[in-house]
Length: 213
Image 1 (cartoon, rainbow, N blue to C red):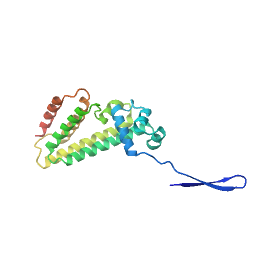
Image 2: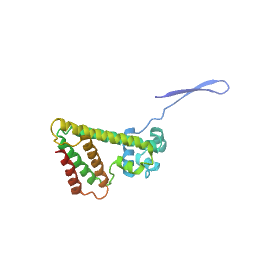
Image 3: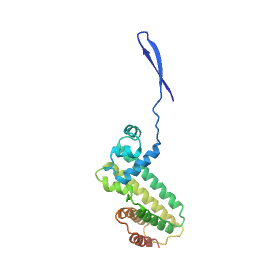
């Protein structure tokens, strides 16, 4: 939109008008945020400088600050995006797996394979953030606790569904199982950052899944 600006000019009070074009963003905010998320995920918060962001995102500092705020705000927006994608992805995955035992088996199998295929050894963005910034950054504690409970609840509801339709015969407390599976799911990402052993991880998961029978 072209915006007119009028002003008085000279001693004769002649009114002049000029037009200016508001600054238009020449980039997609969502695409840039995804790039920022991947950079923070790979390098961590402290190791990522503003210049790193400028180079990786392909936009200048002014655009970063105008659109996302400072580095801390951009990091937290990136972290929020990662959490949202992970949560929605897990819900969708379980919705497509009607057999709960097979669903958990494939979930862990996929997590192991993804960890092995990850040549950059990024691990899990959430776990990386916990180990790097907690407890020094207390502002993240509440967010991380909410994230933890969200995922445990997703696991719990899936287990509950399996129990109600007779797929699971276990007498184990489902909330405890959900917490255990959440811990194992994140643990795969942690141990896989150092020479992941597919057989060891797979055998461990089999033991955990035996609790469902």
